[in-house]
Length: 154
Image (cartoon, rainbow, N blue to C red; front, side):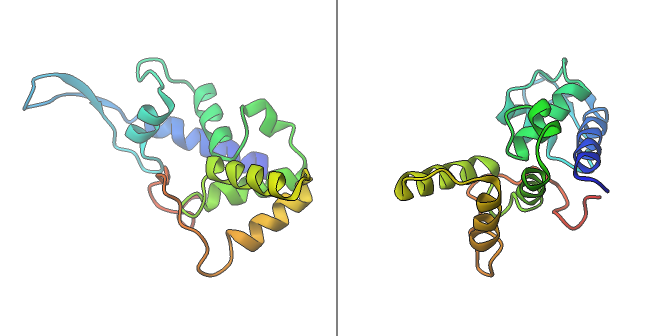
């Protein structure tokens, strides 16, 4: 599966999870809210963290969310990315439990500042492999939005 196909599938899975919503009434406060029977993603956390409107979510917004989780500002940036950038994006997505895209961006910014350089895509990929994928590597302080972990997602 190509990286773009992988990310399209993840966006579709996120949107499928969204479509499992049902309206429920909270027995404690009597307020109506949505519940999800999600299979792939923590929908509640995504709506809170990304500030999406639960009544106005679309496949396009799912794509945007996946692009952000993969380290891009928007889906169009992901779609135009180089092979090396997509390889890094897939690693960021697959290992968001170790270091999410935001933590990675801060790590790279600090390393570039400390070394007075700008790393190209190949260097960023190699640094990621050496820092994040090594045994005993970091564990993210943030939420992994995937429900089943990297090995369970197609």
